[in-house]
Image (tube, rainbow, N blue to C red; front, side, top):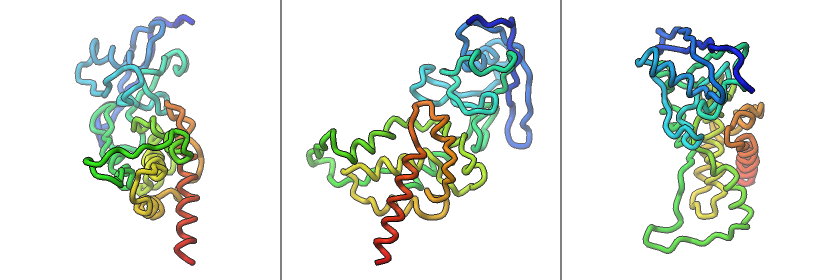
Length: 242
């Protein structure tokens, strides 16, 4: 399908903090044009001070994630003709994160919660010992593999209304990572993971709305992972109470 209009009317969020404002641009419209193409055109042809992030341009790094017409997306894989309304685009930095400048969100809070969720490997062996061999058909490994393709783009974090309304909530990406590590048979401290995700802002804060799963560009299912953590933490709680 060819783009019918000669120009796109694009509104871009500029500045940061109390100085955020919206700036309008007219951008030439082309076939197979992505939202990242639009942002790049503005920076290269109109305003070189426009600040944004990107790296691979092929959906592998996730660094180009932004809000496009109110929805979190990878801009490198989002074609204008699929998301524009009357040839209009509104482009903003990811929701639920501080803004450094223009379209660049500060990812530190996002990764900080990933650590808070204890989504780190607790080794059972030293680097000097042979790597433990795990059966590829092992049920726990299969469960762990379901979330392994998360690239921490924070699209799910930006989509989550619970994150918006609860600053302590760890968020879907961090909890999915915790579930992945929890199901790794080579992890030595599963209790530390359950303790980390069962407290204030943990998995039980999730309202199961499902926006994280709906918007995940890699078609992962963080909501399912969070449900797994809810079951595991509840089971652990009742075992301790015996």
